[in-house]
Length: 283
Image (cartoon, rainbow, N blue to C red; front, side):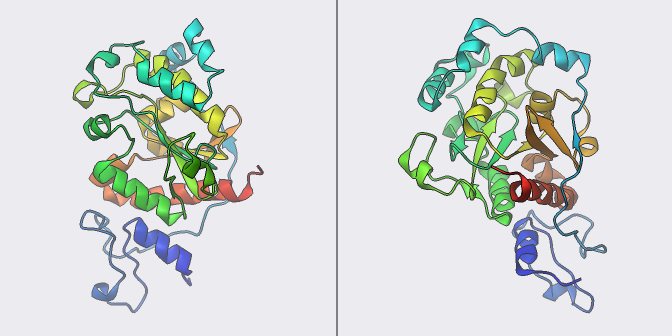
């Protein structure tokens, strides 16, 4: 097949080494970094597909344990969150002490990006570096996420919601990045169902304010919060889901991809599916 410049760029940003028949391996396009060589894939035996067409929307069933936490009656404070604008929502997150995480955090991790971005990225819980910086997806996993977004022509906005610079940026070329939890669990342990459900109204309000055309759910706990599913990522990715009318694409967390680089090719497929939503969903 003939590779377009856009496809070559996307592969390179994802850290996939392009091999063509008759091309010596040493002359293949270089990977993006020392950790990005795909394990077991010195040369791609099968061509990476062109961007996927939008497939049927699937609503994942909720296991009883997840549904009980996500669908439990909302407290009055959660209902009040539905009326908050960006500054008020940020202030509510910063002062939140609704669960035990408020006592152990350094600071909250509200989110970053364009307040009306067409694409919204939802991650899991903040880690140590996020807790220190107050921004989601920093460090090595954040660098990989930035390369993945850059492969789609997307980037983080230069300002936080409510800032003039963020508003001036093109929402079609920017993303908004948020986590399911706004506080780091101690020692980076997994979030509890109670912590996820307690923080859920903040994420829901962020989605309502951004009004994205597509949500990219990265990792197990992002999927649990949005889809209420405990199915493995490998079984949920590759097709569209929906959350309150918004298309959701499930994919691997960048931290997982750093440990399992062979799955970068599958993550590239997921990015193509998200891109197809940006191209076809009106708005």
